[in-house]
Amino acid sequence: MKTISSRQNPWFKRLRDAVHDHAGEIVIEGPKQVADAIGGGWRAIAVIERGGEAEHPPENVSGTAHLSLSAELFDAVAETRATQGVMALFERPQFTLDMILRQRESIVVALDGVQDPGNVGSIVRLAAAFDAAGVALLPGCADAFGPKAIRASAAAILTVPVVNVTAHDLIAARIPLFAAQQTANAAAVPSKNAIIVFGSEGSGVSKEIAQSATSIAVPMSSRVESLNVATAAAILLWRSFEARSR
Amino acid sequence: MKTISSRQNPWFKRLRDAVHDHAGEIVIEGPKQVADAIGGGWRAIAVIERGGEAEHPPENVSGTAHLSLSAELFDAVAETRATQGVMALFERPQFTLDMILRQRESIVVALDGVQDPGNVGSIVRLAAAFDAAGVALLPGCADAFGPKAIRASAAAILTVPVVNVTAHDLIAARIPLFAAQQTANAAAVPSKNAIIVFGSEGSGVSKEIAQSATSIAVPMSSRVESLNVATAAAILLWRSFEARSR
Image 1 (spheres, rainbow over the protein chains, first blue to last red):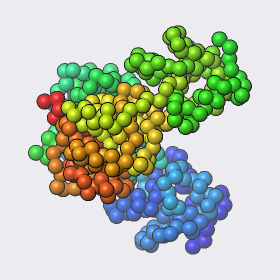
Image 2: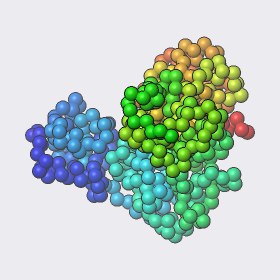
Image 3: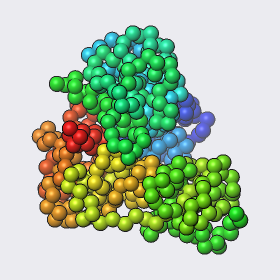
Image 4: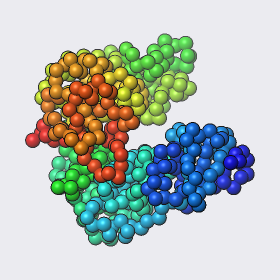
């Protein structure tokens, strides 16, 4: 395998674009994450090693290119420290809100203005852990397919349908809408046929959503004012899962 | 108020040491966090502004020095982007395991080898949200009083007793010991008179703890192998709080 060392090489440019823009293609970093994605049925367009250094080079998979980038080029592309010398290029999964809403036996997770990619990725992982139908991202959220969100999702991003939507899309879906809020008058956490919206920790969900949604909450001590959004989501999505599993 | 601009100034050195070593003194960054700490009864040794720029300079509190550091020195000290031009120096709170264990009506949270300061801080915040008696840090954990952990705790660090302990200390306490594990044979989550230990996501709790502890777990889908430790702690500490509130 020849090691690519020129910044003019089309593979280098394609990988860099996937890491930065994650529009049509995305990059998964780290040998375990890449193996999990391939094991989960995703076909890698290319598997890339750092300077041919990988201790356990990924096996050859038909239809997948195997490349080696020089250490300098590899490090210029990689955005997290989790690569351990391996990354892979995949097509960005494409889903629609309709595909997610069809699964009425579970709930849909929606995020509203959650800017931190670590929180978005953590909540994608929670959606997988607690069998949500999918994740809908309202305006103002970090892209779930950016490197930091993918890393926080621990590669769950490839098992959870994620779509970008507007508040109007969610309201027009005519499925019961719930919003996580700090309130004393909270309803029971829904187990199915519902959309649960989480806003940012500072400003909560948008007015449009709040007006159409029933409030649910995490009961807690008065010693803290609020919880981190991924923490609140962990508790409420677990409660939904638990109610569904009964 | 004179602005300090020399690296030889004793206040500059003292602040830098508090941020780096957080041994006898600690630094809280951000106007809201500083105000919350002072509101919570903590006496600030000094409140520090960045080049006299603060839009809302903290009020004068008797016994507290008010300083202004030049932008260059302030930025050299601050370790997070959350300062908004304000930080304050406090004495590091000192607690003992005995002080925490005395509160038998709640549970004690223990962390074993949790290296990420963000996770340690998040769990300190959860301990406040769900009224745990305190947090005990076993060897291998990030210091709860480092700047990243303090930031992740959203200043809950000043309302939750945190102590450093050994596995032997916890076992010798003769209080029922529980460990969060991925297991099918999990016991009920205890509501009081118990210590709950969380290990790192990769390696779990240490052997010594595992041998003495009863396993508790978060039931979840087989789609993910594990949860982030702060996420698992959110769910289990909420369940303990909820059982205690009944």
